[in-house]
Image 1 (spheres, rainbow, N blue to C red):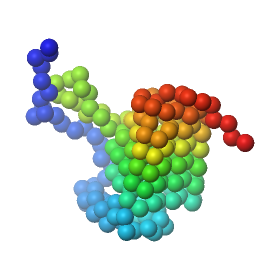
Image 2 (cartoon, rainbow, N blue to C red):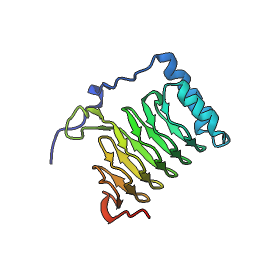
Image 3 (tube, rainbow, N blue to C red):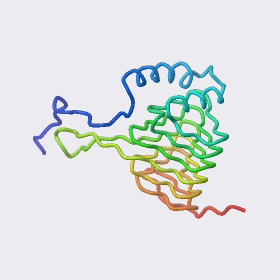
Image 4 (cartoon, helix red, strand yellow):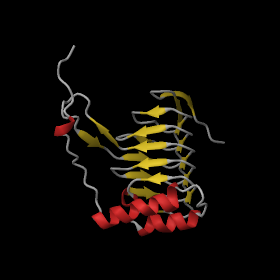
Length: 184
């Protein structure tokens, strides 16, 4: 048994937010009113607001209701991407996608974590990259530091802790390759 314990009093965040306190605060309320709110079905308004707050979005991006985006100024998406209902982009670090990327209902992109081996429980955050044609299945989770290569698929409720190879379908927790993806 290890007698050491986590010392939360010593914990300090070291993340660079990348926006002023005013921008952070105003985004917090915009996110609640227009993104997390299931009554707002107007994707074009959400795309406009994301761009206003610094997101770099290609043409044809669709944002469904009940979406939660931590920091839009750390979001880059290519053309014709889809953000499904209840997706949570917890982007303390950059999240970038290529074009034709689908984030299905309830998917979670989680860039931040903690070092469980240290008593100070140090915070760490790493970017996520989703290349062209990637599909993140419903309720699936992608951790920081992961790159999902071109046209890979992360299956329903699966967890990607490591990079996904191109044109490969992954399932499970942790996600493992199950079959090559063939597009006709």
